[in-house]
Length: 451
Ligand code: ASP
Image (cartoon, rainbow, N blue to C red; front, side):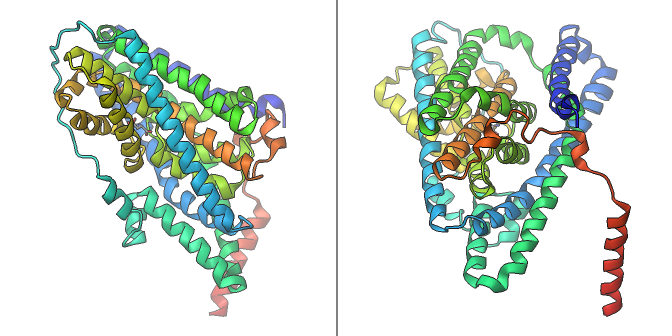
C-alpha cells in the first residue's frame, strides 16, 4: 500500500477538524448562526445529528471493547502477579500526574493574579450538583449486577467484573480455553468495528467541531481572556512539558514520537469532550501505534479515562484562583492544599464525560468555602475549555499506559519507533471475501442440519 494511502484517514481527520473550525468561526463571526434556517437545519440540524450519531457510535463500542479486551488482557498476561503491579503503578502515576497538574495550575494562576479587580456581574447562574463521596465510589467498584453496570456504562465496576472473570477463567484452566479463544475473536471483531466507525470520523469530527465553534460565545472569550489564556497556557505546559518529562524520566522513550502519534486521539477527545467516548480510539492507538501490549492497555486505558483527569484538575486549579480573586477571598496555603487533595479525590469518582469538571469544581468550592454561583462566571467558555482539557486528559492516559507497559516489558519498541505503525487507513476495513461468506453460510447450514 502506498504511503499516501496509509496516511489518508489521519490527514482527513485533521482536515475535518481544520474545516470545522473555519466553518464554525465563519458562522459565528458573521452572525449567520442566529439565522433560523442555519441554526435549525445546519448547526442544530445536520451538524448536530451527524456529530451525535458518531459520538453514539463511539460510545456503543466502549463497553464490549473494554469487556472483551480486559478478559483477553488478563488471560494473556502470562503472569497474574503482574496484574497487581500494573494496577498499583498506573494508579500511583495517575494520581501523581493529576496532583502535579493542579499544583502547577495553581502556581501559574497565582503568579498571574488572574481575576484580581474584576467586577462580579455574572449573568449565568450555576447551581452545584453533588459528586459521589469517596466511600460510595469504593463500594460501587463492585457491581451488584454486572449487566446493569454494562448497561449504564459504569467503567470501574465493569473493569472489576471483567478482571475477575479473566482470573476465574485462568483458575478453571484448560477447560476454559474455548471461552478464552472466543473472547480473543470477539476482541478482534470489536477492533474491526472501531475501524468501521473510524471511516466516517473525518465528517463527524467536522460536524462536531463546526457546531461547537459556531455556537460558542466568542465575545465571552474576550471578557474572560485572562482566565482562558492562563488556563490554556497551563494545559499546554502540562501536555508538552510535564507529561513529556514524566514519559522520558520513567520510560526513556522519545516524547516527539509520542506527541506525533497521540494527535489523532487528541482530535477525538477535543471534538467529543469525553475521555470515555474516546476509549476505543485511545485503546487502538496505544496498542497499535505505540506497541503497548493489550494486557496492559486493556486495563490502563479505561481505568485512566475514569480516574485520570489532568486537564480537568488544571481547570479546577485555575478556576479556583480566578474566582477566589474575583470575590476577594484569600485561600492561603492550607486552602490550596485542600483544593489539590479534593480535586485528586474527586477525579477518582467521576467519569470522563462532557462537563463533569464543573461538577467536580462545585465540590471543591463547597469544601474551601468559595461561592458556588461563582462558577457561573466561567460557564460560558467552559465547553471550549472542556474540549481542550479532555485532549490533555487522554494524553495523560496514554502517557501512563506507555510508561507502565515499558516498565513491565510489555511495550514493543519496534512498533513505538515505527512512524507508520498502526496508522488508520480505509482499506483496513477489508473486503468481503466470497469464499469466506460461503464457508460461514455453510457452517450455519451444517449446524442447523445437525439439530
Ligand atoms: N470532559 C472531560 C473528560 O471527559 C471531563 C471534564 O473535564 O469535564 O475527560
